Length: 297
Image (cartoon, rainbow, N blue to C red; front, side, top):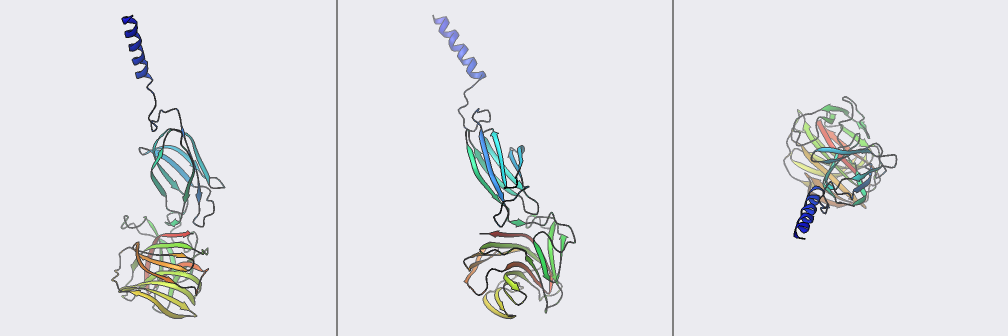
């Protein structure tokens, strides 16, 4: 009897070692697989087709899918584990999500990816009208700038130029959001010390818009009505040529919060202008713009 019990115990241990129970919910060999589904969206919240989604583990691509006409993508029969999700769409900066935990039996069906930052990498050198943007003054073109890769997405940028203090260069985004987040990186190149750069907000025409303008010694918020400049806010700071900065505004029901380098600058409630275009601005110089974020709310 003792020999039988010993034989049974030994056999059980051998079988258990060969086929151990898969109780770890993140064990890739767990037979209870995961499911991962979602949608990709344009910056105006409409479905985005053609985005390529990569499911990666330990820097290895495990699965790939492309979003369909409804923006939908899916990964089924996924081994449990900790994953990185990479999403790439033409004209937009790639999106990365990590870590994403897919335990055994997980059914993640609402993983939504929004593309909202234009990096100009898919636009053609020399093009004055990159995807979504149209100049309404000055000289604009896609150019190369491989310097400072930690400050912006290299290599391509959108350069705007205006060669006098009496004229400005403006390039507007083609769609009008009601509420939005609008941000951009910029770097000034100019032989003059009287340069200015910034963003236009609620642009109606060349005589009516808001302007967040950076000068060498200040950052100013203006309201231009019928060509008349009205100063709303000013903050005195030093800005240098050849340095990347990031400015932006977030709007909700005509209440706008302005930012410099992702830090609060000032807030203004003004209902004079709305339902206008967003755009980039240059005066008396040459300015590189990159990583332009426009997200409709």
